[in-house]
Image (cartoon, rainbow, N blue to C red; front, side, top):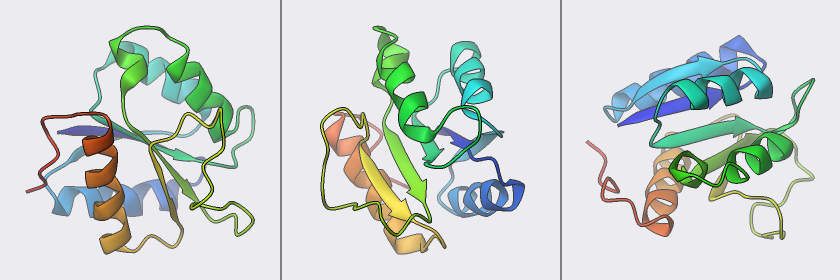
Amino acid sequence: MRALCIDDHPVNRRVLVVLLATAGIEADEAESGPEGLQRIEACDYDLVFMDLRMPEMDGLEAAARIRGRGDEKGEVPIILVTADVEFSIDTPRAGDHLDGAIFKPIKPDALFEAIASALVSRGSDRARLN
């Protein structure tokens, strides 16, 4: 399984990559929404983790652009990763284009629960983690 971690803070990306590795998930990194979109164009991912607040392009705009592709890559599960306490994980909003969300600092149990839920919701045959 392969994931893409998009976050403008290198430490946040690194923590996520290390946690994903414990579940056998290989992860690439992107430091901005535009870079993440380029990586999605170049590679197939099973999951995308998206920071909410980034310069240039925030996570919701980047997620909308991924969904707007109109191809198989646009169907990748997207999990928002945020430290924004005003964002409500339990309140789905039309147009968010997200399959889940977790708060920073990332708790492994919450991360793995969000991954399983996102994979199941997208009908992935890879819903089992190592």
